[in-house]
Length: 429
Image 1 (cartoon, helix red, strand yellow):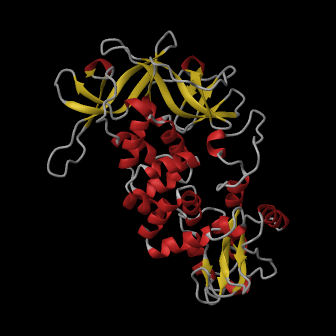
Image 2 (cartoon, helix red, strand yellow; image 1 turned 90 degrees about the vertical axis):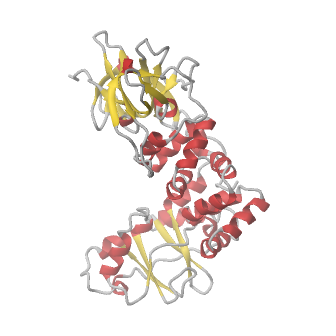
């Protein structure tokens, strides 16, 4: 039997999975809906904005919530799967309350909302009971001031509309704690003015990670609102294949300006990917797999695949080539599977553990040919070589899926049956 939940803070709920009484995950929390009528009337918590299969957003009434802890939320009853449409009387905590400028009633000290505490009453309705307020920083460095958790009635300004000067510090902190895909979903749902403020405050690397998970239309819109210097910097932080897909969606003159502003080596990788035919192995490959020379040891290989920036698919194979080792490399000698390397002595040579019987893909291989190749050999990644046997890059299963799913799949999501709707098409289509 579930115990009644106690006080929780809204920002800590975002990203938590939602389970039904049978233990099946049914959704993931994205925001909290509250009604703030005035500074003298306790704000009510209406429900949780949750994402179900296919990125559809619904609202789960708080009366359905039976348990909350640090890892999950449990609800009872059937979920209403109608898409959530925000009403004029409703306020979203993450999107609209965090960083709201407020004043502490007794002291008159200004601050911003850092988080919102909420708890159930005896009637099982939920209310906002506490507000975490961060004071402005002091001194030349303007370090963040102290944060106070106060009663809701001790704060003035919650009911005021968000101003154009609303900051993004607390929301940025919350976004940085999320997985890139979750952060992308939250950013996608923000009001335009709020999104602009958040994008301006995100660092280039984090913005690049989030952009890679966003729908193509959002990517283009965000990039077009950045100044060209920063847009080029963000593109440099993206993986070359994702950057190439995004640049291909831009007007040709804009694309050329950004490529000229990028670092030459980064731009060269992107230009090379853009030179291949649409929806081919060359267009979807990653030009920076783990490449080692024939004298590399197993210990060297394991050190390289520990790189946290590598996706699991890219870390599954090590590619052994003749010099030069930058793509396009010298002749590909063979690939080594990470499972095999884990069974070898660290001091032994990677060349002694190669799977040299594995066939490589050509850059003009079609989506169907790439899919058949990965399925036939039970692979999550495969090398792509030119006519001379030089390694050009690697195609991973996530690259393949990204191109096989319908254009705009990130914002269209899946159909009710769980099958992808619409015609098949690549990212550049």
